Length: 189
Image 1 (spheres, rainbow, N blue to C red):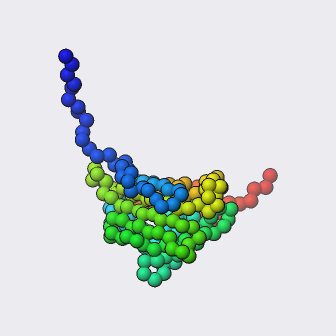
Image 2 (cartoon, rainbow, N blue to C red):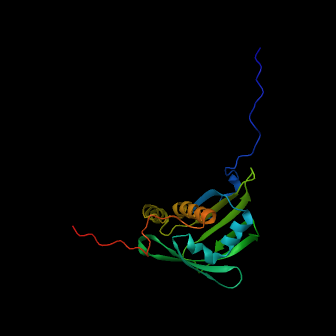
Image 3 (cartoon, helix red, strand yellow):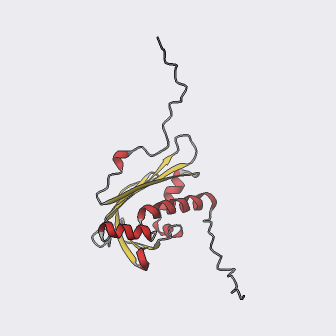
């Protein structure tokens, strides 16, 4: 006769992303990324919701122009020095929590996505999750080229969330590039 010892594991929900049913996109390629940021949810939402702030930490976003209503036009760096224009409209906006968008006809790439801000289950910081679904230009070949050139949205989303975290927690984004104010001298051998 064997008895099973009672479990000492705490019954706590994981902070890991578990909403599998919310990551089905309409397009060929989809990605979900998440990061924990030690700042209040409302502050993070407010910074992100002002789309003009996004080029400060998104290296691939060259500019954002606010249009009428909930529409915006983005110029994004594409593979091999190309530029891509994304025209989007907000489809859902829950202040302090969630922003969803989709592309409009004028957009160079069909896409949709959302960003969600959740209080951490353990009471410290905010969990930020981004979902992106898009049709890569030139299909699978285009996706492969973008990935090799580090311009694939899945790769960029991970980097941009890391930079967003750095900016929100420290007020700056560390870089290994020499500052413009202190250019390096030419070396003569």
